[in-house]
Length: 416
Image 1 (tube, rainbow, N blue to C red):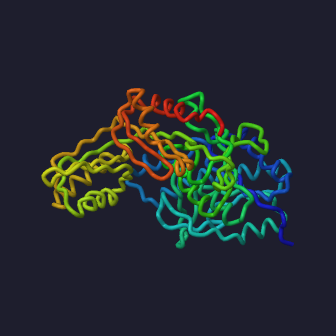
Image 2 (image 1 turned 45 degrees about the vertical axis):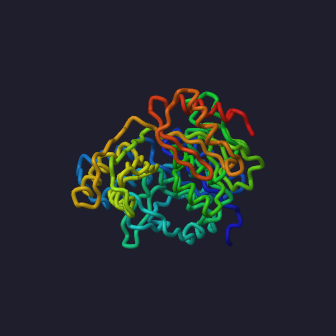
Image 3 (image 1 turned 180 degrees about the vertical axis):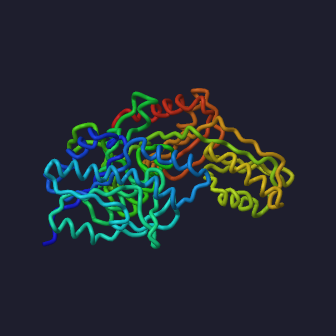
């Protein structure tokens, strides 16, 4: 007889399953939800530090590694955690079993190291739930290609696994357990005034994640927004109540939207300027197509005023992609695609952003932001805006000062 119990997805990150004691603690939370009447799908990461250890072994063995074998190796950490979690639950009297990605099967593209989920058939797990299994423990971060090779989803991929399972199985909710107790208005390590949010919209969380907030992987938030999966971020080290953590949900579920919900930052940014580029139709494509092909993640773009048919083009990218960007531009120059007089890389900058869906209906947020930074003597190098965010590049030495000033300016320590 098919199980009529509602489904819940619970994901535990590396710090939440770092050792046997923490796995035991996580299992107690799963047991509680089973007693609350849920069939539970548990998604687990590798134990803290294990993935880095495996990556280190790969690089030491073969610096120019075969990406297919890399995935076979680094995905093994999650397999260990899944088995240990299932055993722990069984010892507690909870009927549970583990699944590796290929056993589900979680079907992915063949982009090894950065695969994307294509399909999660529900038949195998549904059958076991119907037979009385209460918990399916699934190794996160991994899947299988059409030709039977193991793949991994990239850093933070277990978050994406969890949301995808919640969507596939129409789960009531997807709980992401981590080492923080929710999503804050900014990083509490920078300002003690940071406040935990009770709810945040998908759009705001997506912006915060893409702008540097590391609580959730960007792709997992994209999936949650697309399939309307209610996400809850909460601590695995605290006792839970119905109001624990932060709920990521539809804007309609939030009664009163603040103009600004959070301040995000990205420390490791670089500002790159191509000096004296020909100002002609197609020049932007000639610059940014080679950068894209080189895998450079360009963010902010500013083109200066043209003088005598020449202009400067400035863009930002992560600092670890500067050399790649420089090589791509030199290659484009040598091939005659573009001509420029110099390439200046400033690697001592950071990006600071304010985010809030309330910006849609409130004017003056950018002006208020710029005035606050000016009052603190912080010079703005580049500005970009969207409907619900304003981002600036500033000198890295002013990062904490800028975050604190903006948090105070918009009164984020107070609930809406």
